[in-house]
Image 1 (cartoon, rainbow, N blue to C red):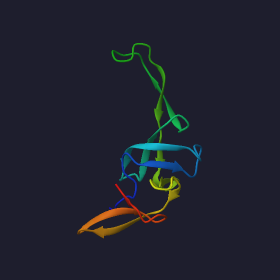
Image 2: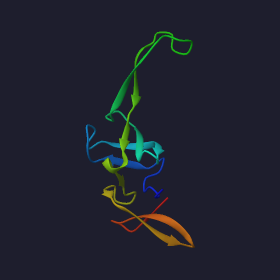
Image 3: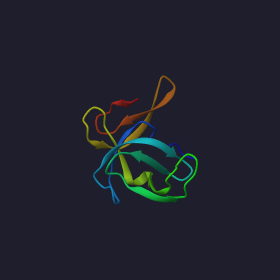
Image 4: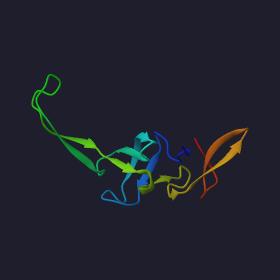
Length: 107
């Protein structure tokens, strides 16, 4: 399986789909499905219908964060604040991510 360029905690911008143009933080990465889950107001949500139970007394329709394919999001460069592609290079015998726009290493 190839390494993904987006990790949990990164700030990304959605470049395609219903939530296009929105910026959000990655809360979960699913590498086997090549999908990410983002947190934010303008981000797409799925509706789930639930029955009343002990944890949810009322039941009803619950909104959940929907997974978005990793190709539909782009990392935001921490230095310039613009979207950027991500590269990998060796620093001190470790593979690190860096911004192709500014050349800065991404933590």
